[in-house]
Amino acid sequence: MRVLVYDDEEDFASFVQEAVEDQGHHVTMVTNAAEFAENFSAETDLIFLDLFMPDVNGIECIRFLAKTGTKALLVLMSGQDPAILNAAREGARASNLTVLDVLQKPIALSAIEDVLDAADATIMSTRQRSAAQAEACCDLQGDDVLEGLQKNEFFVAYQPQLRLENRSVAGLEALLRWQHPECGAVSPAVFIPLAEQSPAVMSALTEFVLKTACYDLIALSGLCPNLKVSVNVSATSLDEIALPDMIQNIVRGIGLENHRLILELTETAASSNLGQAIDILTRLRMAGFGVSIDDFGTGYSSLEQIVQVPFTELKVDQRFVKELLTSDKCRAVCEISCLLARKTGMLPVAEGVEDEATAQELLRLGFVLAQGYHFAKPMAKPQLLDWLRAHDQDTTGVAAAAGG
Picture (tube, rainbow, N blue to C red):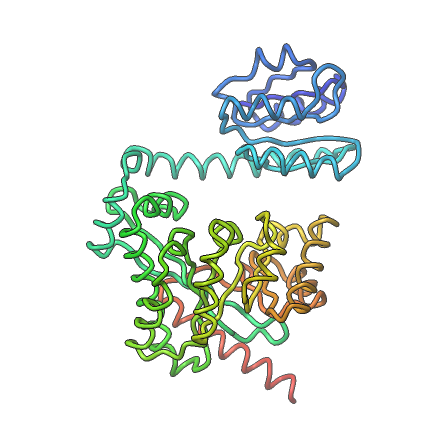
C-alpha cells in the first residue's frame, strides 16, 4: 500500500510515518503544499491529511484531490473543532472522495494501526471487485438491462424490517439484484441509471419487482400473515401518470391486499416533478397503498414534500443512523426526524442499523421500525424463509421466557 502523510507539524507527521512503516507499507511524508502536489500520484492508495496548515489548508487539498478523480482513501486529521472535521468529511464525500476515517488529535498509535488495517481490507475488497467486473461491465448499456431481465438474470432480495420494541418482523424491503453471467453481481448504482435512460426498460424493471414481491408475499402469508413489503419507485416512474393504475392492476391480479404494499421514493424523486408526484402518490394513498419517503435528510425539499405529499412512513437515511452514537449532529437529525414523523402522522423508520447499542438508542428516541445488518442482510427468498422460521422461534422463545 502506498501512503502519503501531509501535516505541517513535522514531529507528528514523523510519528504517523513510523507507524505506517512499522506495518510494512511504503510511505512518503510531506509538510507543505508543494511537496504534497509533487508526491501525490494516481498510485497513491491512502492519504493522511491535516486540515489546519499555514500555507494551504486541508479544504483546498480536498478540492485539489476531487479534481484529480483519485480513488485513494482519505483520513482527515485535526486538533480543532470536531464539527469542522465532520463538515470536511461530508464535503469530501460530496466531492466523490472516499473518506475512510476522521481522527481527532491527539491521535493514539492504536488508532493509526486500526486505520491501516481498515485501509488494507477496503483496498483488497475493491481490487477484487474491480478485477472481476471491470472488463466485462465497462460496456453495459440500457439494452443489456432489458436482455438480462428477459434471460432471468434479475432477482429480488429482501431485507427484513423489525419492530424495535419486541423485534418481531413487520415487513420486508424488496431490493432488485442483477447477477450478470460475465460481470457477476452488478450494483443497482450501475444498472438503475442505465434503465432510467429508457422509460420502457424502467417500467419493465418496476413491473418485475412489483410482481415478484407481491407473489412472494402471498407465498409467505402462511408463515407471516400480516407482513408488508416495500418496493422502491424510480424518479422516472413518476413521469408515468398511469403508474397507480398499473400498480393496482398488478396487485389486484395477484390477490394481495393493497395495504400490504408500500411504495418507497427518495426526496429527490418526489421533488423532480412535485405536482405530478402529488397527483400519483395521492391516488396511491386513496387506493390504500402505503407511501414512504426514503433516505430522508439527503434532499433539499423535504419539509415542503412532507406538507404536500400524503406519506405514511419516513425512513431516516443510514448515514445519520450509522453515526447516531458518535455524532451529536447525526443524533439531532435522527431525533428531530423521528419527532417530525410522529407529529405529521407518519411511521418513523431507521435504516442502516449495525449494532445493538444503536438499536436501543433508536427505540429510546421513538423509532418504531428499523432495518440493517445488525438484524439481517438482504436475502433471496429461500434464505429469507429459513431466516423467518429461525427468527420466529427466537422471538417466541424470548416472549415465553419473558412471560414466565
